[in-house]
Amino acid sequence: MSETATESTTVSATTGSATTDIRQQALACREAAQAVALLSTEAKNALLRAMGDALHADADVILAANAEDLRVAESKGTTGAMLDRLKLDPQRLAAIAGALREVAALPDPVGMVTRRETRPNGIDIARVRVPLGVVAMIYEARPNVTADAAALCLKAGNGVILRGGSEAIRSNTAIAGALKRTLREHGIPEAALTLVEDLRRETMVQLLQLNDIVDLAIPRGGEGLIRFVAEHARVPVIKHYKGVCHLYVDAAADLDLALDLLLDGKVSRPGVCNALETLVVHADVADVFLPRAAAMLSTHGVQLRADDRALPRMPGAVPASDEDWDAEFLDLILAVRVVDSLDDAIAHIRRHGSDHTEVIVTRDETAAARFVHALRSAVIMVNASSRFSDGGELGLGAEIGISTTRLHAYGPMGAESLTIERFVVHGTGQTRNLRN
Image (cartoon, rainbow, N blue to C red; front, side, top):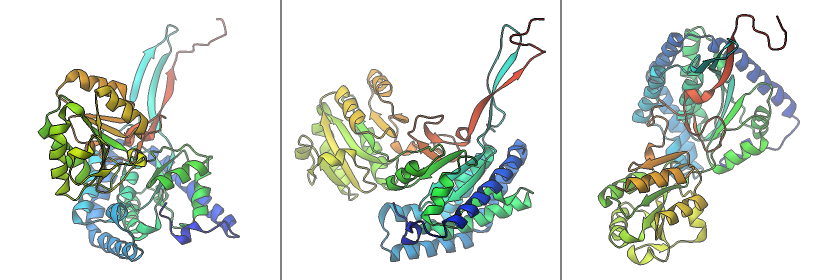
């Protein structure tokens, strides 16, 4: 968990006041959430579009704040995936603003009737989506989450409490400032988007225990952060601990296609949770595929950790350890295994997977169908890159997180996942026990 020393302070005499402060902030957010829940679809969409414009207008301020966050992080020795997630540039900021507009263009989940029936006694029963209420986002060096979470929560009629990490505090404050200014301009209480500035760990724990105010907590970050949230929360938690994503190259695979998917899944952005971590190859194609894969990956600096059967076919590879099969490397490192059958590949993924995303490359529709039905991961790709396991790429506009917890949401979560169904019943005076 990448919390700083100031965030890791032990509970002290200040805890009482910290508890009062975070409780008051949460109560204000709940009150503001009621106003958001009453907004029309048109009003919410106009708000989100204006928020996108505000990020564009404040681009220089936001990027300057991010540059300072990066400078401080680098001075503390931060490297690799954490630094990549922290970094903003004009293109990434434009994409964040674009995601707000994409969320605005999506159907409004609030008020959606998912099922309707009339019972024999004449009562009409509808299942209708309504907002959750207050969502607490706990995240590390991911300034994009500040905007994504705000957009999705507001679209779904919720209030949101944002508690980012110290690494991105300047970026988060600058982004939240633009978004809160837009709330004011649209006559919506600012507390609907509450950024927690007290980064002490005990304050986060108090937030996670406000089960009379907060309806759901969603942590986004490293496995340590997510486990910390799950262990200390008294509110429901949506979580995924890590993304150990597999690419299985079947005996009936198009090997050129498999190479493309392997390159994209491992190299395009290795520090994200939908990047590939393990390559599983059918023995029938291993002799041809593995040397080609090794040559391609070596040009991109990928370190290969191979089992006994893959090792002789992959020049430059080192022997894989038992721990490598369960590892989320978040780096240019790939574990490689050769198997004798589709069932062996499935067995390996069942044992070592994290229920995040799995990919099969095959021209055999029967093999693809078996792979899909035999695995329970949140996302299964057939002849497509693991990098599409993302809310924006899957049509959600943006994502507030990825759930590998089998609750009301599973996989990438968008606005609809921030609502719940309730029953709305219309009658004409029917009673259950009284006789007329």
